[in-house]
Image 1 (cartoon, rainbow, N blue to C red):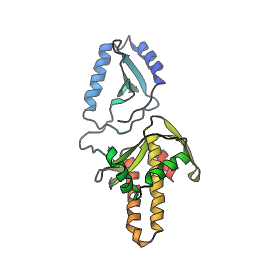
Image 2: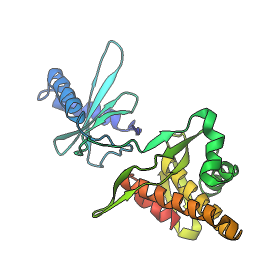
Image 3: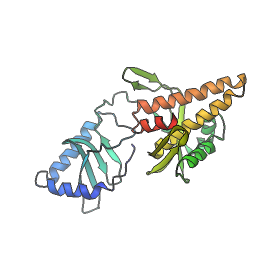
Image 4: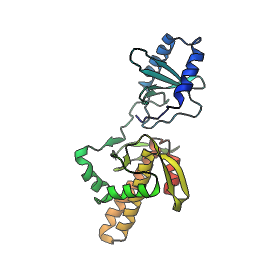
Length: 254
């Protein structure tokens, strides 16, 4: 599950927990964590999760091993459990886990270069994406993950519209922070996560390569069509999973 850096909340969380000690005992805190974990077993876990601005944190630390657990609440209702590493152990999404598909898979190391050619129809796709991100953000290098979006996965992309995904994917830097991105041609400037930056860069290069294929004549018409389908499927993917930065992604590419 996607993790989020909440270092700034640590001091405030401890303070709020101290204020609540007279109301919530450590035993009750433990029961609350168990309750959230039990409820989450039957709820779909979001691939990406961002805390609401009004979320309130309550943390409990163990003196013996320096571990800690944080419970996030919104308006008095439990929302998520977070470990000391920053990872969300579970989230109460309110959506059933039944038939929840695994949309995104990491490409194994041994298949990385082959996958790039399959996705972009050129081995230059990798360097093109990295160069684009370097030119449009403060990205300065790092390890990238390659993701394949499974064909056939289905979901809602609008209130009354469902889509069945075709083969697509993207690549994104493995980075916990954000990048300052600027796309002058689209009047876009914002801080985006590494995942969103990778999706934006991938969509941009898929678009560039599809136009190049269209200019190469009828022989490459099918290649052009598949590249366009990959773009559309990737856009549908971020809608289906309710990517927290979907609005930024669409602003950047339009």
